[in-house]
Amino acid sequence: VRYIEGFDEDTYRRINGDHKARELTCEWCPRESWPEGYLFTVELKRLMSAAIDLVDKLELMMTGCALHVLRSLCAQSARYAPNHVGSTSPLGYAWLFVSPSSASRQQRLASQRNLQTVQGLIQQALRTEALREYVNRSGANEQRKYKEADSKYGHKLFLALGKNLGIIIPRRGPGARFVMTDNVLRYLVMTLLRPGERRTYDEFLDRLYFHYGIAVEKGQLTDAMAWSGLPANDSVQPGKTSWLANMLRASGFLTELSDACSVVQNPFDIETM
Image: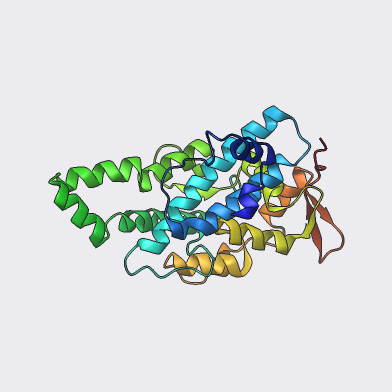
């Protein structure tokens, strides 16, 4: 709480300096959602402290807000879905991302299965016994209420937001799967790393997984497949040259120090007042 209150000193000073407004009034949110809320605060602080154009910041904040809604949907669903067995990611779920242009058939099918598992998780969480009792007490038609909930708050909302963000393709037709986009990757580099920070490629993969459950390769990909009910399959792993590393390199975020070590860097400086 102290970290979040000190995030924007000007707002904190104005609230506490005005006797008519000693506190902010916010909407209700579950106590258990603090991990993803804290992660989002850390990410926003890193983005807001970067020395980039204000309009660029606003566009990236829109990307971040959409990603956070998707993360929150999955994290909360992982907590409440009956009989759910979580993945090894701290938030209890996994997103299996593949290349937007060069994914093999096996990789596309694995990501499709993973997306179906994610949607099933959200759908199950909306059908807990407590929610069923609430719907029945209200006297509403259960089938109609759940149809509305799936569209407005559930897996259909997840699918629509993901498609609008570009990380779920195609927009129409079968075969929906997770992919990375240049805009989302730029946001992730700027928020998973502090301005000017450098980390190895493997450490960056860890942060992707810990913050968002995004699995790209190696053990994290194996876990995402197992969580999706798929057997381990080496053909789903990227080849010698990772497609994500290629995207980072093309964007100027990745530097090879040797054949065995690559470094991901947030190239932006800290903004000075």
